[in-house]
Image 1: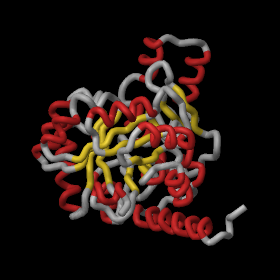
Image 2: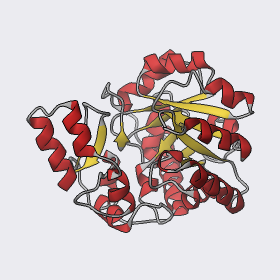
Image 3: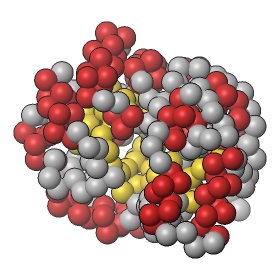
Image 4: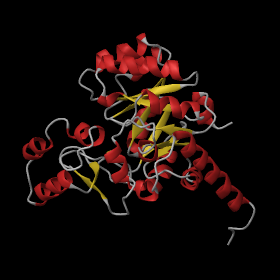
Length: 316
């Protein structure tokens, strides 16, 4: 049996990324009900809001689901206590070292997965005691690692560095892409962008429609003096490019970013002033779909490509 499916108790080795301003209980429960693993995105929730989403997700699905926790979250202790109090069983951590919180989470019976952008950090995750690893290439939307390693190069490097169950992320939104990562050593995929653009996503309709019109090259990795972030070209993005081109300081970049930009763009739909985070793979999609339709299409594409590769029709 696939180790990712076995670890989480799910039908398909497809995990929905716990994206800020997109990943509420409707999206997470829909992914879980369709056979994947839905994740709530704690990064854009105050602790009590997270508690509400956990309870609504528990009511909406009897399937496993989890919570994604950025470890640099300002109210991290309150958030961790809520995970314990509400009986959360699966936690994905990111944006920080898993060393401090992994023992705490595992002591309370949780399965812990950490997101990395290099083989070096993958090895450190194994030392910290996590149960699985997500290796994310910089094709991904939102915050990325400073290494700027593509998924195609990252997955085999991480596979050599650890024996833990491995999920691939970054630029993955189709079944044939999922199969390609399996050939490189992954056992499952974490998909953000495609799920961010589904009907169940909490993202604003303006943001969804903009992303469904993108082509290759319409996103850029910027804000490198702060935290490298993949953004859609637009008003705020242009301001960031101009500031970086003239060598703006870290302090200037922080002032430009300000507070609440991602919420303004992705959740409230202000496409000029908001921070618009999406992955490169958005260029492959042109219509809004339900989560169930997306997962069915991914699995159909995976099976069709697997058949093509194994029946000899794609042989050299």
